[in-house]
Length: 372
Image 1 (tube, rainbow, N blue to C red):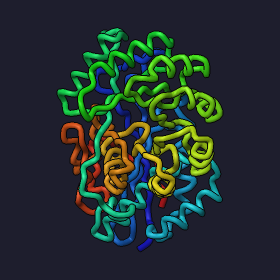
Image 2: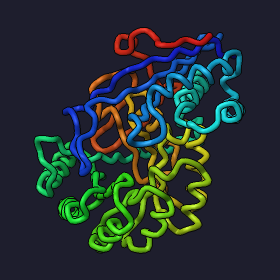
Image 3: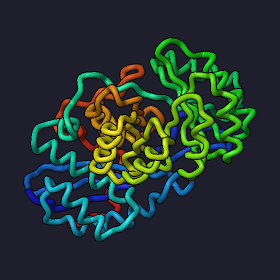
Image 4: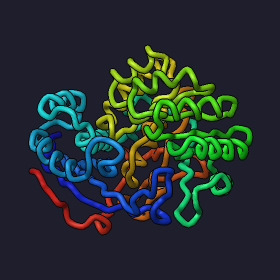
């Protein structure tokens, strides 16, 4: 089997309900996603997607993906898609850094491997566990809700009614306000529920320490309190509960540094940020061997990204998996059919071959680039 054609599509993903309010302002009302389709001479194809959500969250943006993917794609024509590890090494040598550019291509290769083997991707990633994966839900409030403890409590109750049991707060603003938000969410907790306070690198060290000490006795996970890993290492001793690192976890080397510094209990592995399912699997397996817990996550996206997360989560030992996410629950555009979606606060991967998807070309239109 050889790769014969690679097509690149652009799609805008509007958020449900419009822009969300966060402590540092409103998020955009839509994000720009890139979808890749890899075709082979055997008639088997694979799909991949990445949505780095602009320049304000992580490295890169959609324009860079669309410029970089065709450069890598030229080197993939004529290659065997089953050689996914070798191809990862090869494009890393040709195209240093910018791992997010490689993510949709890697995802599509795993989709091809699964389809050609008549197996779901979860089985290709190390074995499929029977348990459904628990979902977290970002507790966004809309502009009209205001940003207050009462609004946070109301949103937690709303998402509980939808079946969620893990609530992620977007904090990282003024410490006293964040302390009140965390306390309000924790006061809503029932048995088996979790609160994760995600600062998204927003606190200074002094603010992070202030918040961590104020909520030390509350059942809350502190996520990515500061921008750099060095800052997070310094803040960790002030936290009473588990610490989850997200933005600073880009490579296996980052995981090792954080682990040896005693700075992390939960590692958020964002498939798009680390470069695709191949590198995500490597990072996941290292975390499990170190005794760490992982969150199977990604930045943004539609059915393709969410399907990859479902398979990634389903192949992770539930003992070490805190949760995952269904990003289709945040956007209004459907790009593919076949994604099972969530069932209340849980998600199960498709048992169909590959990712189990068929592209909705009516939602994408013509490709913006074709390499053959």
